Length: 280
Image (cartoon, rainbow, N blue to C red; front, side, top):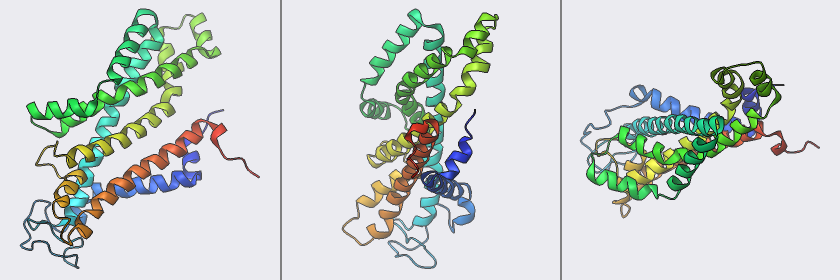
């Protein structure tokens, strides 16, 4: 019997709350030109203006509207999260699937590479790349994905080995089905929920790391992101502007991560019914 994961998510309180938070962030990013009153880089003429009907979250030190930057920053953060998660899931699926399906030398080689990759500190390597290359959103997505895929490779490998042990896979092998057919019909469909869970996990890590790297100044200066807003606002914490400049992007990062965490928690419960609370 197949589990309806969409129903499981919407029936869970955590799932509904997580999906609501993610939907809000996605709609804000999608409708940014409609919701914004100004261009994110436009000079309004008012510096450090407190929130009002004209500037919902006030303005920063160069007279830019903070509300506009907040919703346009959602585009950057969600794009990096989605791009990083997609690339990392693809690498995990490729490496873990090859290791499980072919075994032997291929399996040992891939798993030793994973072991080596896990001990490399990602932050130091990303800082070095940023020092010698021009930081960009594509480079950041590539670097983040390059250091995230080993975790998922182990999970995909273990799950694929479990699927290979099923009777349906053995029957297909007995009847002469090709490896490509067995992969397409007996492995990939059942890996779907696991890959979705990995996507959510990678997206949560990517948003957190992007905010942290931007906060440290390791990002494209022309990009508008929540982490960049935090970095810029931190220099003016001695003024009252932190109340409308520092807190909103911090809340946006936190709520988006919480939304992904709650969605992942609900999906994890759907994947493993043993985690469900007992009904009295």
